[in-house]
Length: 382
Picture 1 (cartoon, rainbow, N blue to C red):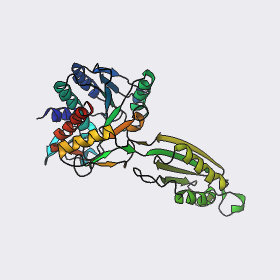
Picture 2: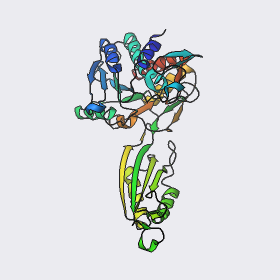
Picture 3: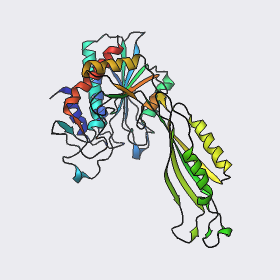
Picture 4: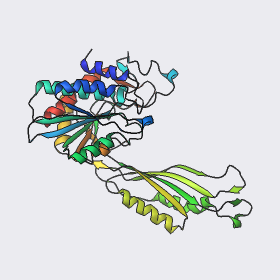
């Protein structure tokens, strides 16, 4: 059994459902410390939702050395119905050339590959002019409030410089290395409450129906072209996810309607510009309303440069293929790292089984993934 596979199985065996870590970070810190990493816990959050965070840094001692951070998470999503799994989700199992277990793809294999890649790099290049950091949290699958965001704020305050970031999220589509993420769209959520006047449905002149009042405005928002996107991002999208009104009775005009909606926005728009345009539309339709906003993350983009080149070359050398740059998908902790790091790339195993029953990763992908991470470190140290 390879070192990477062994560590992956040890991590899968720990039921670290968000926000639990179940000792994963302690084990990893124990492996990194002998390599010269200074390991620091930055745990955060209330007692009933305590989040585990690890910041580990190995300084090369070279004044001009760049710093690369490998970013991941040890938490996993809940298993779903246990009886639907063909093997226990926290008992690593091999079937048909695959390793099964919750977190196999998202993202304990990547975390293990980070650690072993660092071990091999340090052993082979002990004096390489590259500072290596590893940032891990147990709050990526959850609210993401007390995880990477907290560590980034601490690093920002101490002036920690980061030049490159590699996030181990599962990004491949058909085969390992076929797609990497060089950016992500921003996420902006709104909760709109439209106020009317409740009344009897037979006497509409004595009431004010918020559903009728809001329909034209909602239709306009749904048809609005917010931007045209760009070479790296599709156009910004607006989607309503929930509409609720009514008292439960069929003969009552409701007094209010609540609409949940979300923007997935590219770098052609900002949260501020989207908020302003929504406000303008609602006010033009003379609605009485309240609107609460939640910014889940700003968009970020890494254009081709040293990090993209290092990752592309690593995939080319290990897998013999050309990788595709993409900004599709949801958000990742890269949105927090973008506050202090100019170049971010996400690369990991295929994502077809993430969050599903019988989550798995191909056994044949585990060592090549570790090799890709090691090659990235080697390329950046040149």
